[in-house]
Length: 583
Ligand code: PEP
Ligand code: MG
Image 1 (cartoon, helix red, strand yellow):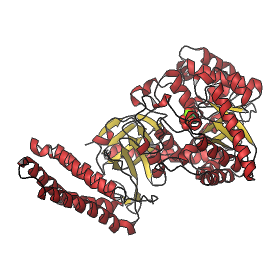
Image 2: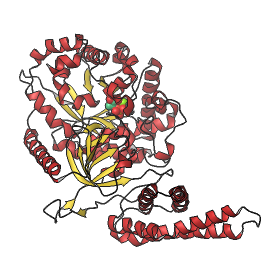
Image 3: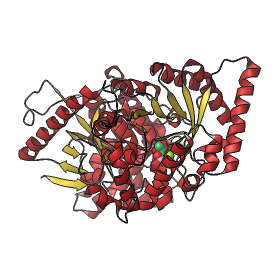
Image 4: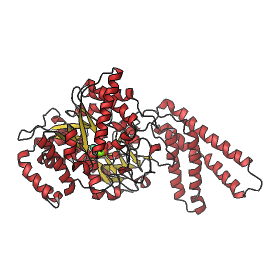
């Protein structure tokens, strides 16, 4: 039966494929694809985990005191029976053999399948056995963890269902459905083949959404109970423009979305012809279109769409999912150098590590202990709290600057004291490199404007920095007091709120007046609905995901900044800027 689930659209386009559910377990389970020669060893791992738990339960049974309540013995029997049940073991083998899921993922997937069957049972006693199953599965998982060794995800593909799609020689696209995905999980999935994804939680500029946009695949977040309603292997359509997920679509709906998918491909094809066209407005203003990247190899797609540099390298992605072991100076230096060399002489802006809030270092570190992580020890605050770690990063960036044009960007500054501490640590890193006789290069220094306090004290920032970069994702979050990752307040997250526009406009104007560089690197920069407004406010440098650059360039080529300037002022003065923009 066809039904739809509504969420928040975060990455455009249409994806059609089979659902791959990433079950949320209370245990922190890794999800990755194995290679076919690892199938038997993965099956062995589950078997070993299960046998160990069977031994453990049997031992418990034997050692049970004579006067123990007999319900306890019965419960152990139930657990042993569930563990040895054919539905569990054969299902797990299926996910490993046919889908190449790693052992833990296969086990949690099969658990989900069986627990749904339990949910549908009439008999209350049987329905309640789901909790027992959950306990034994967690016991097995606990046994297996530690022995797990994640591998890089190779592509995994399945044949298309013949009755739905004509050409059965082509592979079936897979669509990821999860309660939530950490940025570290997303990075791992970035290397695999998902055609789109859906999550129950998240807002428009949550980091999971940002990574989806950088992967250039349709995505819907904040779809509430999607991961409960959609079943493993269901056919689904993700409409990344409308924020709708259609489950088990009828042939007519499939045909309609297939058509839209092809239209999207044609549009991309048409835009790709703009790759080598200079981004110059009708009135001759040259506009800088830069790329936001997460990993050094992202420079490739950036160059492919004609980016004239990297405006934001989110270096924190090098630090994530490493289970406490942070990258050392050499590893960081090699990564930054690869990005710098990858851009072939074009400038690269490296932002110092910005972890915290919805960008935990890894799942295990996801720190719920802080009452309000977005207002806590994140970004530059985290770096200044650990000067040795920060100096390591600064030395690595300084050394990479010997290989090309590097700009250093500092996130989340608000206080003069933070600025002065940061600058003195940069000086200190230079002295350390001098003492070691290491080669390093010159840097331009920039600050992100993402806290209203910073936008309201621009003179202070411009005294110390060569350029500013407006992080609108956080600037909106902190100006409007809206958690950017919380779908329940996503409707209030408004880039066009007059207060946000005022802070953005004043920052651009002040930098232009002082002849300092200014860029926008938040998601506003890649939103084609806002390109004309930002041009009218005087912005000449935009940094966004490579996937957005050509569409923004198209807007630039059609714009006349002379005409847009007075219009932008009326938008800025309006009580409801969105309605003026729509006119
Ligand atoms: C921003 O806040 O706009 C920004 C670019 O930084 P991030 O999204 O990584 O927090
Ligand atoms: Mg930010």
